[in-house]
Image (cartoon, rainbow, N blue to C red; front, top):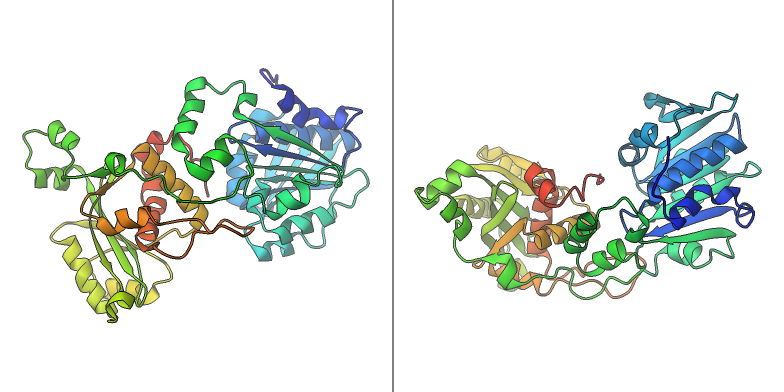
Length: 435
């Protein structure tokens, strides 16, 4: 394969191990903005280095999950790696065997660093090197176990990531101490990807806001602070349903017929007994979702807690006579899910509940106009103006206040809209790589 249009940093990330100035380093760290070419250059460089330096050795290729690793790295190997290198995948064993036709053959094991227990997956193995893709998403215990297993003389560590907060352990341990750790640190920006069209770069700049813009577009290790969502009532709300643009599109249709004939209805719920219960009624049409109405109740404020049956009654009122495709509920609300299923009217889907990916997705959908909030949904609008990041800590966390409508909106975006093909198109494939 012939590589063209490589920036100076991309060439360095790929071939640093050949350069006298850097070849004695124990590791390379590539961080910075998304779509800057970090993954492809490091992956190609990792295989070129390992196949030229070793034969008959074992290596690790690590991602947050095996699924994301296959999607982001392994499936692309045949397009990225030179044609004279033969790749044999043994999927059931989570490994690939690579040979170069000159007698060199190595084995590469695939690992997912999903949670704190993942470190046990790599215990006992001896490695000649490791590539850790999106290392910031992996637990420290897993990363340190992988590093400890690289004990073959000449072994090297290859890290790449988008930045997190400045207090993140990887930033503190590796990025800020790169010289002390005998590591080469290469910082990327989108301008390093010479194949990225200007209009695509501008799309990413539009899609991200706040801390995600600073991290994923500017490539900064920055603190998550202030409001989580950049919410503008004039931009992100609508006053009448169906919205004016749809009424104009179907001028001969009764408004009720428009909603019944051309879209789908959903309800998203954040369950609470003493804490607030929040539910939103959504209408989805060609990749756009409209929060038409909501129900919000705080047992703490009223000093009266409602039962699951009482909440189910409110759910029916919110649905009215509409055909609800699914009710999206926090998976921890087991008793309420059981109540809904017992009545048999609504299909229930347990929500995807990954907080930071869900917030990032919701922020981008809000920015892109994929979701709109009805002017009558006052509790959701109120929470958008109050939902903030905690100001301290190694890990980004939202303050657990004024977050109940925010949670039900996040559940809806992460569970329903994330898979909507029109919404994905509107986001320009930003989330094709997500788990």
